[in-house]
Amino acid sequence: MCSTIDVTTLADLLRRAAKAEILPRFRRLGSDDVRAKSEATDLVTEADLQAERMIKAEAAALWPDAVFIGEESVAADPDLLGKLEGADLAIVVDPVDGTFNFASGIPAFGVMASVVSKGETVAGIIYDPMGDDWVMAEKGGGAWLRRPGGEAERLAVAAPVALEEMVGMASTGFLPKPKRSEILANLAKVRFLANYRCAAHEYRAFAGGHVHYLMYNKLMPWDHLAGTLISIEAGAHAARFDGSPYLPHHTSGGLLIAPDKDSWDILRIEVFTI
Image (cartoon, rainbow, N blue to C red; front, side, top):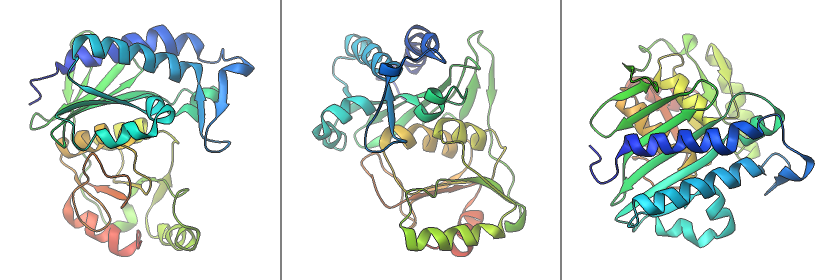
């Protein structure tokens, strides 16, 4: 369990930031409120910036010893990311996951945070502003869907099925081009492939038992730490493509998540031949 940072307090902070800075801007962004970062589909909005600013300020007041690693903070200061591996305690935040959807007026976005202690992810939170609930986990405590009224429902991944019956999510856009065509052809072996352009909702769908696999090639901690821990606590097998554990400082090596090790092995051999 994570005893240094009260996860319920952190979860409530994400909710308050969403209500104060994100939801009032949804479908109300002006032309100056959206900017491209690395490419035309890599966006940042005033909602991202202001939500992260609020979360960072309140987190610093509550947990002054924690290193704060936010997506937009790292965009402004790339050297900040290097502090994660050696930090005794860190809070990693994605203020608006699914910014492309948010900027497009599509209600599929989330706010994510994770707690890292001495190189290990010990808590993860995914808040859905539209549904007003959290999917969250603390290491060793299971994965839970929690609502503001106090209701809680334990989550479990889907039961394993044969390869041809698997449905899931794969982010193929960051694969190298020669391999992308091969992987896309291999995906004909599964029943269904989707991509929400929002890791927050993809992880929620997986941990809730609605899909059988997730695959990502590009790894940034704010995108995947919370969801990976939640998935593992819901019963999943998660590993990088070489079979090694995914750790907070990893930004490469890919990530494949499945209901169990046998499903993971089948997907790795038959589909994700990277």
